[in-house]
Amino acid sequence: TPYVYQGEELGMTNAYFTELKDYRDIESIQYFHEYTEAGIYTPEYMMKCLMLRGRDNARTPMQWEDSHQAGFTEGTPWIRVNSNYKEINAKQQLSDPNSIFRYYQKLIRLRKEKPVIVYGVFEALYRDHDQIFAYTRTLEGEKLLTVCNFSEHVAKMEIPEEFQKNAECLITNLGRKDFGKKVVLKPYEAFVLYKNL
Image (cartoon, rainbow, N blue to C red; front, side, top):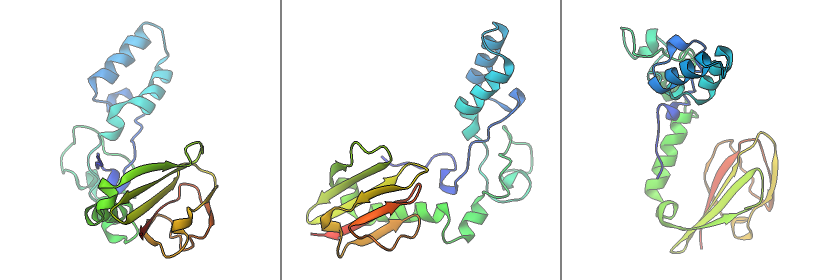
């Protein structure tokens, strides 16, 4: 089940608060006091733990625009606004045709238009590859190939033969046009090819 959660459709990032006073999550605050007062961890180490694992890092107010408090409120929000709201906000995303928000819109539209995405029979490819997550879905004469490089390094792969000619690229995050026999995926590159069988 796909979901859009806490501003990820805008590319909102974790806040990584550096002071305990910025956190509101009771569990995080209790763990901080429990472990530091018992001498198990230093306050500095616990702050790093909260930055990595604390839930409040993703609970910051929605970043609507680049004005005061990210356009979320004219008052004081319950938790601090992420400091990158001037660069990452809905207003900026809506004005950019290549934004993360526009990419999400396209993904949602494709899911509604192509039943093979939801109901197609799943077959994993490259199961032992450390970088590539790829699979096909097949449904009533339609086939879909999804390829993702989940690493910061290039990755080589061979496109399945049935997608080497006359396949339609439904979506790509880096603008790839060539889908020949062998491809070198850029870091974090993803694309989906579609074919009527």
